[in-house]
Image (cartoon, one colour):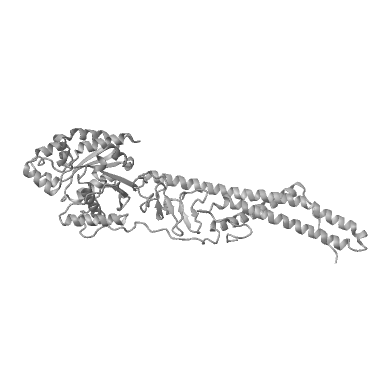
Length: 526
């Protein structure tokens, strides 16, 4: 039967159907047993009743009694071989199911191992970008595109090796390389929506660390603009995951073009600005750019709430040079007025900010160590117009030496101990996009590629177009059993038939070998 109802009904699952060989195959066996045995008993008893009425129903019954007794004894004697045949068929049924289960288990183990290797080789990291969560995710919850049911364990397992069948009948892939990344994904901890392609592309958290008004938002906008230009130059793509982030970026770009400043970040915990970058080759990342208000770095309790610092390999330390006490004291009155009019300096000493963050990180699993740290000195266009900033430059060595000279030497040495690699970068509104793209590419693990110059994209702003095709809804509907159930029933029947024929043939051959018969042929005269 292909419907849920029938001699062996299939219960509608809460989320997805279990594999046929794990449960339904035994319900089918029980249905066959409870159907065949009563029917055999009914037929046998009916034959006995018919023989009794026919042979013993008249005066001749006394003479027909021996015949009736012999026939009834034959029917009773047939019960034993019938039971033996039934037991043999049951054993063969179990053997077919066991072979199928072994094949299913092998597929499950191979698929699970391949996916683990894929995740390890691609260094796939999955984390939640939502405030008050920021948890690391082993497996997202996936949504069925047919009915919206949430599947928390969409992996090779009891519901299927290659596909799970949803309660609505839709067939869903169980691994990333089979297409699972094309389903809508949600965080299992907070149920927040996760970006498309999660699980196929590495998530790279990029925390922007810096005090209030240090220029974190401005540099993040410049970085997105530079990566967008790089993606266009290399015939790749860059898209926002959330529409609100695309709109916020468009507003920020409009403010920059009008000569204004970036809007101050609100005091709430940040939702990561999620950017999906797809460059030619294997250069793919989902960047989580965390840009909290600088006030979140002004106290140990506030730093503790930024749980996204637990994940990832990189960190961007944004330094406002005019917040350094030695620089601030060295400014002349005219320089100070000019700086205040152009961009108000941060009120937090960068050394205090970084030390607070490093102290918070040391209590975490990796002891706060990062593979890559980018130190971004902002407002270098203003800094170059001051006497103390003329020697700062924008290159790595020049900036490092200058920061050491203006009292940030202990911070520089602390970073050397806390990170595998540290780069220093000077950023301003006129910084070449190629340089910004190189820095963000390095810190996020994207390979550098400057075959074509990355020019600002003008009015062409990145949108939110998905970088993967949605999974199509295919299946047999919610009124019919999954195709796997139908195929399983036919496979068990075919396997049982083959094994039965083979067993009968083997028994016949064994009997013939044990008791050979000699045949004589006579020529009959006509």
